[in-house]
Amino acid sequence: MSTSQPSYESYLQIQGLLSLQKPLSEPEAHDEMQFIIVHQVYELWFKLLLHEARATIGHLQKGHAGPAYWLLRRCIEITRVLIQQMHVMETMSPAKFLEFRDCLKPASGLQSAQFRALEFYSGMKDPRYLQLYPGDPANTGLLKEALHDASLWDGFVDLLHSRGFQVSDKEQQLHALVEVYGNERMLDLHQLAEAMIEYDEAFRIWRNRHYLMAERMIGFKPGTGVQHTDQMKMSGEDAFKDPGVNYLKGRTEHRFFPLLWEVRSRLGGGTYGA
Ligand code: HEM
Image 1 (cartoon, rainbow, N blue to C red):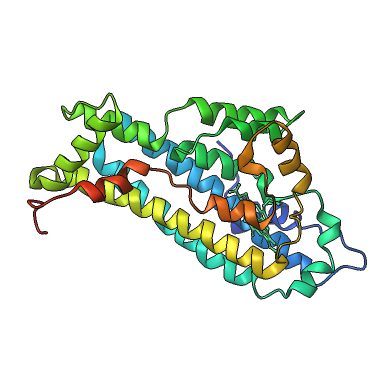
Image 2 (image 1 turned 180 degrees about the vertical axis):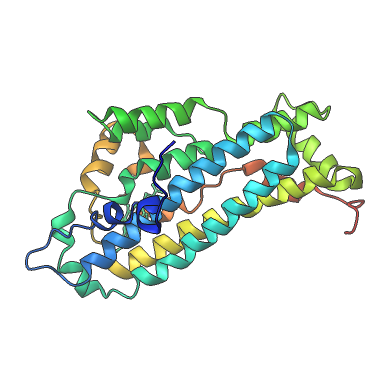
C-alpha cells in the first residue's frame, strides 16, 4: 500500500486523463474536441457497464437475485445517460463534422470492442465481429472471452433452474416466465425479469437514437467504417450488405432477451395485479 496520501488529481489520474484528447485536423477544427471527448466518455461508460454486467452474471449464477437486481438498475441508469449524451453530439452541424471527418477514416464506432463485448455479455453473441480485429490480440481476446462466457440471459436461466424450473429449451423457458409473471411469491424473479427488459429496452432506444443522429449528421453517405462492413460482406454475411446508416437501421431490430419480449403475448388472465 502506498504511504503518500492521495489527492483528487493523483487518485483520479487527472493529468493522464486530460492528456488523451488529440485532434487530428490541421488547422484544428473546433468541433473535433467535442467529438473525441463524447466518444471517450462513452468508452468509459462501456467499461463500467462491462464491469457491472460481469458481476451481475456472477450473482445470477450463484442464485443471488437481489444483488443482481441492484446492479442491473445501475446498468439501466448508465444506458439512459448514453441515450441522453447523443444530444451533445447533435450540437455539431453536419458541415462542422465535414471539417474533420476525413481525418478519422477508416475509424468507426463499429470497431468499439467494448461495445461489442457488452452486446455479447448481454446475450447478442455474433462471432462475425471478431473479423474486425486482425492483428489485435487484446481486442480479439476480449471478444473471444465475452463470446464464451455466460451471458446475462444464461445467468437468468441458471437462476430459474436453481428455483426448480425446467429450462432446457425455449418452450420450457417461456413456460417458466409465464409462471414467474403470474405468481406473487416469485416477486424477486418478476422484478429481475422486468429490470432485464428495461435494460434491453434502454439499449434499443440507444440504437434508435444513434441511428437517427447518424442519419441527421451524414444522411446516406457511406459510414467511415465502410471498408470494414465491406470486408464482412465479403465473408458472405448479408447483415452487412448495406453499410452506413442502413446498417444501423437493421441493428435497431436487435434485442438482448427475445423471450422476455415474446412472453408478453403469452400472458393471460390471472397475472396478479393485472
Ligand atoms: C457524428 C457522429 C456519428 C456518426 C455520423 C456515426 C455514424 C455511424 C455509422 C454510419 C455507423 C455504421 C458503421 C459505419 O458505416 O461506419 C456507426 C456505428 C457505430 N457507432 Fe456511430 N456515429 C457517430 C457517433 C457515435 C458515438 C458518439 C458513438 C458512441 C460510442 C458511436 C458508436 C457506434 C457504435 C457502437 C457503432 C456500431 C453499432 C452496431 O454495430 O450496432 N457512434 N456509427
